[in-house]
Image (cartoon, rainbow, N blue to C red; front, side, top):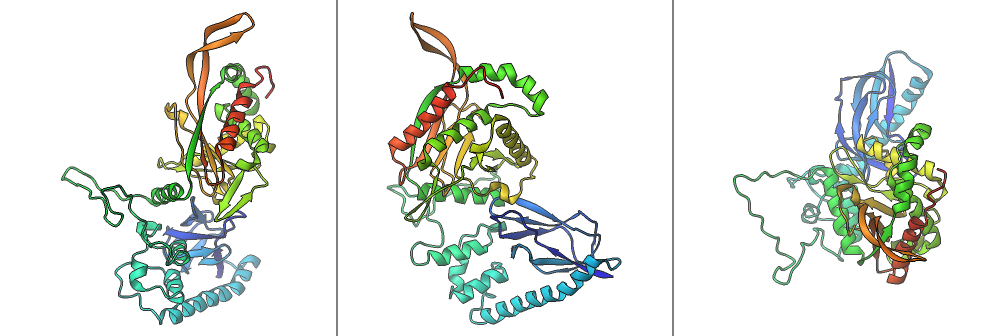
Length: 427
């Protein structure tokens, strides 16, 4: 018999750790090669970790809600035979287990200075270790709003609390009105016919991100109407041939994304992020696109180096990320590194929208529904009324660092690129 170490695999350049959310196998269970053993979650994406070998799960080294670093051994699987790879795993397994035991000893030793056992709430060893080392009391720990499963406090939660300790309360403040003090929760009336359903993990994360964004950025909006008649006619003319040649459906989204990428090159002041009092000018143009998950929640996968793609490449990227979002197959790195975001609210028939900025970016563009409308058409012979295909672009931007001149000029440039679309162009 040989032992194989199941490690947390690398999930992208920007992903260094993940939280274990569920063990799909128990100690003693038989595991087949490529069979999922556990579920993990990064900042936005949930994933399954499969086994690389067939065998029996003999050890589980981390529990649900523990944060694991990429490359750490998370379980031991006993296999038949003794291949070279398995033999190497035996040699490294003892070291891995020793490291885990050493970590446990450190946690135990550090936690001796603070007893969290009196709390009815569950805290992972890592969270208790950090709390003990930083002198966080049990009452403080219990009052931290957890973003993990079932509201549990994660590593990020405790670190954010420590970072902002003494500056802001651990529990997010309630919305205030003139007659509603900030310390008083808004009462909720519940009757016998109401159903109480707890938010899932993703919904809690989205909720936290949206509230934090509104509290962080000074949101303002600029709107502009765009005549996209040439785009509609061109797409109607080429979409069948495009799909036949490229194997991809041609939607309006990649055409719009192409224009946004061009405008960001013209106005690099929109392709930035904010970190405290510092502005970070981004070298690459990485476009986020809001997409739906299987459970209906939204996620923002990212098209990397979008300005370097032609229309075919943009269409393939949009379709790939959209399809993998719908089937729950996005990878953690797919949602990282965005520098500007586009959301298509027109899918649901909306003609206006005021989207919330995806932090730490400084702008987000909402694409709304395209409609046939009567419009004044100017010609050398005079003006007349005609039917045109039009839409609005809704641009939300962070007024802390983007003034109206830049925010308005950027969305106007997007509109100019769309209205100047060549109806005779190739793909």
